[in-house]
Image 1: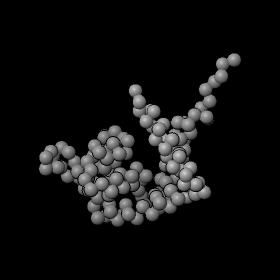
Image 2: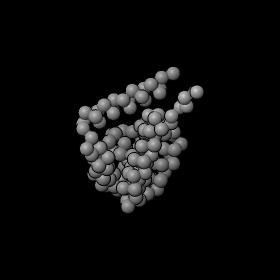
Image 3: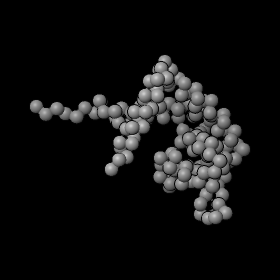
Amino acid sequence: MLKLFNLDDCLAFITNQSAKLFAEALENEFRPYSITRSQWVAMYYIYTNESITQRKLADKMAIKEPSVVRLLQKLELDGLLRRSGTTADKRIKQLELSDKGIKVCTELIPIAENFKSNTVHGIPEEDLQTFKRVLELMTKNTLKE
């Protein structure tokens, strides 16, 4: 008898399901601030990178540039972000949080830190480092052609 593939034992599937659960839970934490998880991730990268373009942000967030543009339009509309052309090329947009954006982003950092702490509670640091190392290797293996 042919042994069937067991999806429930596939690490890629398990990590994907877990990532969705974590993303939804963090989204719920940010809901009272009227900020989505994706908006906060974008704001975080803009805040922590002195000079970042739309393209670099899309790469960091692992999303396509048109998706990041829509996300940035919403942040700009809400007064959380400013985009400006670079002196070398006006088509390349530099991103910067507004004062309001900095305030919101920094208010949400402790919520994200608390979420992270709760998520890894009771897991030894050595196990967390092993998990990160294994995920990195799995990612590298996936990117090999």
